[in-house]
Image (tube, rainbow, N blue to C red; front, side):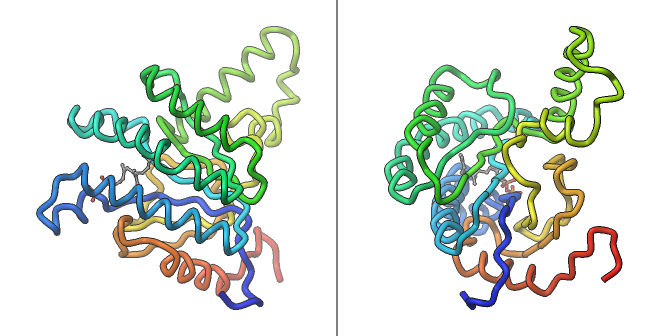
Length: 237
Ligand code: FPP
């Protein structure tokens, strides 16, 4: 990658197209998701090498529970397999894993796997990988509002102290900067309930590449496109 290139501090990705990738090859959707996990592995490695500090990926939305039970089961199994397959390499690469989303609906087995990956990678300082699991932006904002309302009810907070910072600090992403770049694969051009608060000044990049085909090269293309953008944050240059 060109040395002059501006590297986004935080990249967030809507990984889409696993099902279509599998269909094109006459495979089961679950094989598409497995290939998606391999693409995620390659993308994490590339992002850390490029110098990205935060990578957030939309791995399972609150709406995904409505998929056929067999597919939901396969995705839950993939979370566990993904933890086993990738934890040693993530530790080696200095990648710290965080989970954003509501973990209360996951089985004990899935939660144990998530505890393992977050626990074992906790010392990683090179990059943070945030896995959005049972995540949606509306449920995140609802949860944040409930927390703030509870503080007001307890007398710990005055309504006029609920400002943008207080809201940001109540989201699952409290410890992260807002994403500079949001990537969506597979040709779809929508946000699908992902980081709606945090995306206020993000640059968007849409690519036709299906997620299982994404990796170092596609990531570099996205960063090149980001470098051609003029971020003004509502100001005049
Ligand atoms: C969207 O493709 C993808 C998902 C809903 C799942 C994303 C999961 C992975 C990439 C697997 C690795 C990650 C973890 C942590 C388990 P789609 O099924 O909507 O594809 P389609 O639109 O072509 O049907």
